[in-house]
Length: 121
Image (tube, rainbow, N blue to C red; front, side, top):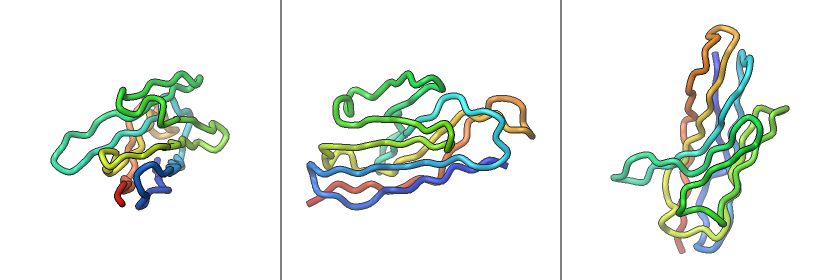
């Protein structure tokens, strides 16, 4: 059994900052890529940022220069530092990870439950 648990969402004013965390737990053998996606009301889920097992990153154009993704492999945790937040960043943010567990020895996508980020004055 593998779980991803997110934390760190909330309400912030435009121009403010938030830090999201996502911790993977369970019978984990190895974790490959990890990332953050978001879904705003009435819109499709979209990629925000991803980071490979060796630290290579890629970002959506809309967040480049404002968001930073990082990971702590020892803690099986991925972070998203969000700065200069805008109202259009408002969405539910979901953590995603490709994990090979001891019970399913195939890389499988897992999702967190989502955390709300609201940017408003």
